[in-house]
Length: 191
Image 1 (cartoon, rainbow, N blue to C red):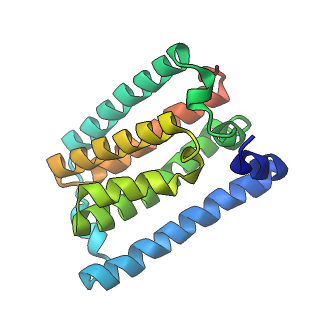
Image 2 (cartoon, helix red, strand yellow):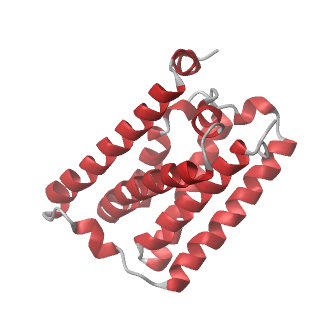
């Protein structure tokens, strides 16, 4: 058992959820601080966000493809390749659908504002995508999950380059997390 899995096992569900929310709060604070430091504007990321239905739909469509691929992978690859130490199951399995939507929204918004809105817009897709994968530290012990996360991050980065709109990647990230969270909750995503 990895050190991460041991720590997760000792945490109560409430403590694990609290850690998730604290992490997302730290990410949001980092968004504004880095926006100010790097771009000279506290609210720089919001200049990269605009409402465009076709961009939102594109983000949702890409998310559906990713979720289908991941659900197929569950059926064909060894369990160990997708083992994140039980974190996702602990986060999602006992949550209501509304709570899963709230978690997915908070995570999708905060992470995309940071990784696409600040880091990719300032330093490019490669550093942003690698940092995105690294922040998902529990995947570092698992080559397959880490590689999948890097690939997913590059795909989201390319989607952002294509549309120039944070809305697209935020919608995509939220839909991915929402559908996979619901799949865990309703035991569709099982090994």
